[in-house]
Image (cartoon, rainbow, N blue to C red):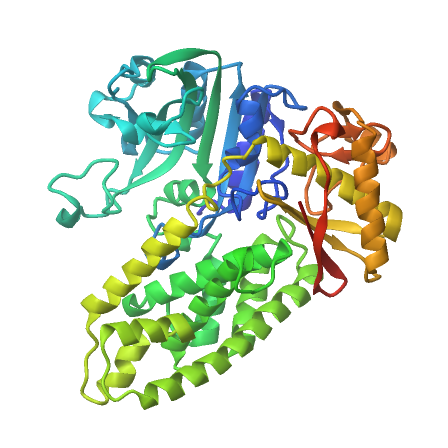
Length: 593
């Protein structure tokens, strides 16, 4: 019998607990206090301050399973192993165990607990580059565990981790180190020579699947470009839940795991198409991935829009709708709502959702967006009828304006005996991607927290704003999110009453009076129950561990937060609220600088 995701979660939890690790709750998919990324993209994202030296409230051995979303390769979804939404199983050592223990424990988990055949496991180790030698300790550890030399591969920069990427890109003072990936070989998959003459673990043909990576934060870059060893070394491990489950079930198609089986069944029922038919697989995979990711994003309080997280939600839903249209020749918004409920919510009920409580909001958002999109499709069809001859640039403009994929445009013009210049279409598409990446290179770095002085000022000012709104508007206000950059702070909140200009002005005056009082900013690590009893404010979407970090601003503000902050409010300077707007039902947004 195939292993379920429930069982895999249980086994991972028990194994970590048996080695004295404490569970840290996953952070929301939309991070509250990280302006450098729109979504949580890895399990280590919340651990950055602690990997860099801050003490963690729960100690030095930690683990969790973190929901993640990565938008970079939305267009590539459709093969048997890539998804935008996934869960990362992670464990961390903050200066305690290191390479030998981590490698041994992960090997035992894979082979003794999960019973993966040793002959199908391969590993990669760091081969060394200029200024940094090969990771012989990791190589020898794998050998002592019984791994054959032809199952151990040495790679250069591919087996190195730092927040800045390869070693030469690291700024002085930046930590990083070698890593060691583990791959599972699906012997039933034939090597595709398109990807190279010989297959190897880092080959993209699909025969090998990376299922886990242990990062050893061992070095710090010096000002002269050399590297020195860190006094306290850390381990950051991440393993894909979906991929490990596929390996345990010895099937290279992660969409056949029970993380997707119910979703795909609901798509089959809605479309009257079978996943087993080769011509349907890619479209069904895209629908399954995109609807699942959309459900999780909506659960995190995001609605479709043309900005930031809402932009990606809209893009996911519309791409799923287009694929369903391609499968069935029609677009039925209610069917996509049913897939969200009977597929996604059923699969994750009592793990990440309460189906009965969540389904109305989530399905309503999806149905409303797809109904809105169907009108856009109608406009696009009318626009296409006006075009006498089609070229690749026009096809791309239609794609941009109305969400029409190239395949649908081709089908409409085939009746006129015309073909679309695909080379020109993809040239325009690539140009657009390059411009988007350039424009957003600073926005989508993925959790490389900005600790500039101005950002720290605004971070602390946000705590003052939260308390000031509480004082002015009453105890029913609730934080819904925040976004802080070096240029401004943004604070979203729930309120049953619309704030008047006078109330906003009073909140601004309160903030500046507390800044003028030069209040000290300090933190304490406390039991969660004690912090709640003290009246410390928290973000309701976030789960907190039994021990929490609480920042105190004098006797005025108390709030759960990982930090960092200024030492004294006098460092902040004057704060001006320059915009206040309604963004939803009882939802408001304040901008200040």
